[in-house]
Length: 109
Image (spheres, rainbow, N blue to C red):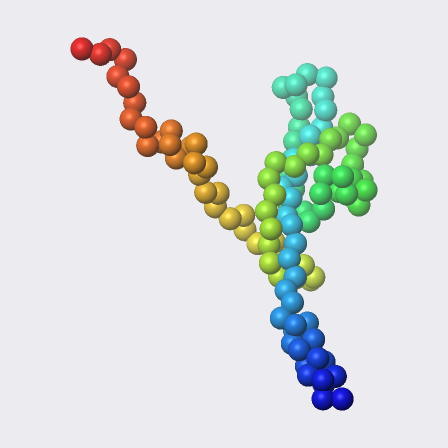
């Protein structure tokens, strides 16, 4: 019986420490046009991915959804809580090397 209560205590402590997380998608909704210069687009942030979004929010037949960025947030999504801001992106090692490489002059002596 003592082992049961110890196990129950550990289990309830683990449940209490559980945390929620969710993913935010920055979606680009593009309205196709006859001329590419006339195409309209709008940006939406949602927890729905590009496949789920049109099933939940009806779109026009000539609109296409794609995502441009995504990031993970910790916490709950209930109520009218705004999404967490997008974290700052760390430069990749290739970008860092190109920034640290000195430019070669166009004309060498």
